[in-house]
Image (cartoon, rainbow, N blue to C red):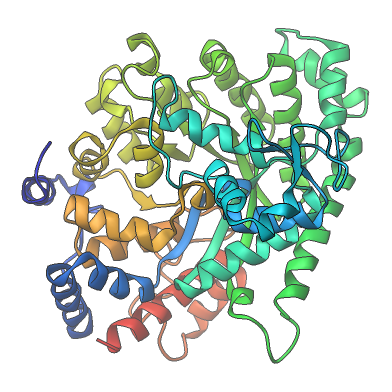
Length: 511
């Protein structure tokens, strides 16, 4: 295991030897007296303690979190309260919630307890918190962190979708107190109709034929229901946060968009049907800004059909080129799958799956020709969503084993994200602290990562940094000139970036 100082040397060397293309990713030199003072204050906090560093970074503007599974972002305490309110029962043997169709409180039956009992039984409450998260988890023979992490979703999954508005309230409120302004949340809308059509029609290797048959048999019929459920959840969040009143909660300031989650661990006909539904939905509803594939990448069907699924995306991308794609790829480590399974996932996600962003990317150095792949990702500006705690608890990959310094060395854009902050019992500030502590990242680099979160977001419109309209003026300060005003009026992305610059300016002036 490398020491922190040796990891810092890796970062330093990366910044010294970079080529011009790579240098775009290098932590910039402080560009103002205020930024220099802030960088110095950051180093002082780092030298004091991780607690001082956390206090400093909690207030730092972070832009957005681009890799968030909404279901996994909810803390166990909230899920227990919702399960109790819904009258759900708990299977005592598994500590998992039972679907309402199986049993409801108070008549839960033998070997079961009302979830509401946890509110008056601390031991039961603690058992459920531990079962719904990584809290208190210790690996045992035959049960790894990977197993515990993914098992949690089955245990609390019976909490009803009527709570999605509550969940939006929770995650946006948590984001706002950490000075975040944007979330891209991954959710899986109901797709029972699409799954039923897939079963009925079966699998065909001819993608054109499959698409025509699915659309002809009414694949899009449930899109209206999906849109309505999202509308209701957003309205519920807005009401809970009093967003239309003078007493609006700070969470109202957090902008939310959604990524359509496709469940990759299913039969190919169902994966294709759900993916097609996601592309159709994202084509007509601007609240859905893209597609992602989820479920354990090391699962049997995920591994067996990985290349096939990338070909599905290649086909659908040609028909729906405006739909953005971010993919979980390389969430693997040696021993989790055979060596052959580590050699191609990230490359195929980029070259076949048309991924604009990669989630995790942990096994990049086990890919065929990894250096060429890294340079290709840098040239294509494919960003990597770095999930440090998630990679640690699921894969056991941390510190010197993590490829974050390698991505930085090659100029691959990166940002920090949480993955499933409720299950992992963390927040985005925790990930910023971890990046600073484990990899020696300095304030300018963390600031660049915050900027990357909006630059590589799927918000519509031209980037503030890609346009000449606002060049030569102090970004985020005063009144922009006419050309810059036109850009901000036409681009949600540029507007969000301008707001981040305003927040950074205020943060740095305070130091």
